[in-house]
Length: 276
Image (cartoon, rainbow, N blue to C red; front, top):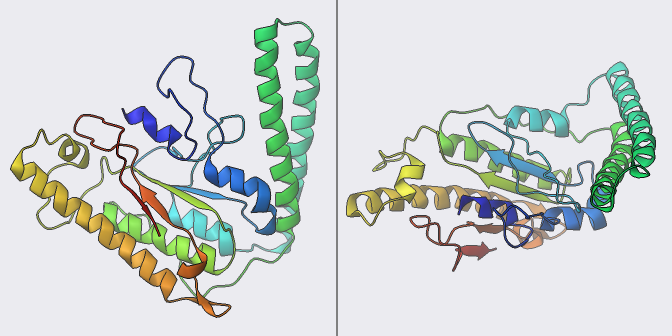
């Protein structure tokens, strides 16, 4: 069912069961190899009315919260701040590392007092702490490196799905073009957004449960065509940027798809998948 979305980039089986434990997502696995080359090791995004759900998970199966506000992502990539702001940021990063050191020491003491099962949980916790520490060290280095400049304006947060998609797709282009990151994931949750798509009057989730009604299927087709037109804009914009004699699209892999093959009955077979 819907719980399958957490395994979209991890392929961890049996999601939704009591014993489920997620594994590392494809973007975070790649970030372990090349994330240090860019200011942002990996950028998880979400198009959603609320919450910061994500497709990205660490090696210990912990979700990496996604960015949902386009203006905040833009500031993270391009707004430098004055010298005092940078100094404060570095101080905060160092403080974060010292807090993690303190917690880790206490956790080691606790491990001596618990049984094997809880000891395993503490090991998982240590693994998460180490990942955070490594990110803090990398972030401290990049905080003192000037950010790239752009003449583009920060995108606004929008109530309409396609407008929000366009804002996020524009950020994806800027992020890749400026080499702020080389790894981006984006979860699109259509529920709750207003629509201004011709021929679409039904809420997105209700459209997916069409029970084969021809009128709802016609709306769903219009809705999905609009999403593919949005994807086409992103691919066309990547193709228009030249980088070392090639288009940015030729130097980028775009994976696009769904965690459900047929949302009407929550079927997870024959997933629609596009690799560009």
